[in-house]
Image 1: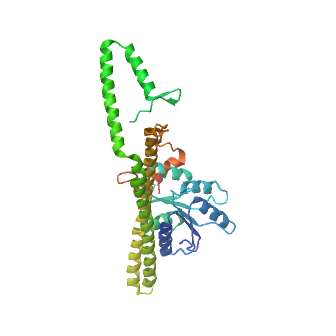
Image 2: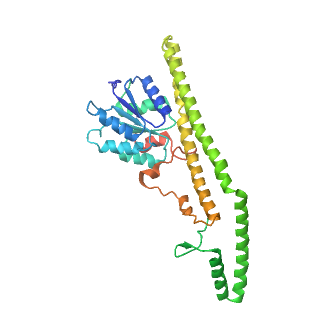
Image 3: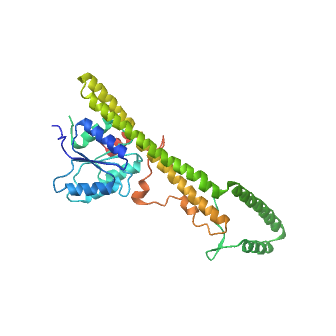
Length: 133
Length: 197
């Protein structure tokens, strides 16, 4: 069974260009309920605002952002009783082993290293939330 | 490696105090050893003179106000210009994508595939932006070093410039290093193996 492409997806990146790229690639995959956030704190605020109506079905977040990084966001999400089950993919240029280990320990569902391609994005999303179809 | 300036009770010593201390020290050593110490001190004095001459040629104040500031501004401008250009490329690709959807299926698929490649390629701006930011950060560090150098040459306490060489970040902050150069970091395949995905 394919995932519901109307599920709300949150794209978090401080580079507007990268948000637009990910949004467009998600759009090509059929997702049509996409929100954007400029950093971890903006994302957390949007996730909490959203929580009264439901949860984001997927968060795709950059790591290196200010004031709140993607890793901090992930930790906040996993520590939040309401948000903690949110599927979370880190998409970042940080590709040192210690980064991946830290993200894994914090509870990341998958990890994409930049630069990435559409096929990688699709396969990692599918690995987290199921076949897109 | 730079040696810290001589201090007594936490205060920088004057040239006269250092000279006096050396004279006292030389007076306490044997004649043979004294000749060796004097020879070494002449060498040292020569090296210090050379250093001052080099620093004088550097004209650090001009370097800071001119070249480094210009390089900093130029790199910031590169980030802005590439960002604007990339945004425009993506916007135009979006238009092509919409047009493509009105074409017969085979052609629409070809256009969609090309547009996807454009989106992927536009990811360069994020990577180059982060690399340039790292260079800008390095330039800021150089500016701070030059500030310290200017203060030193002006007889003002130089501060802890040496300590700034070390990465003192800890915890999560120490993990923020931006894109790795070729041969550094790990690949997507290695990440997948590491995570067991």
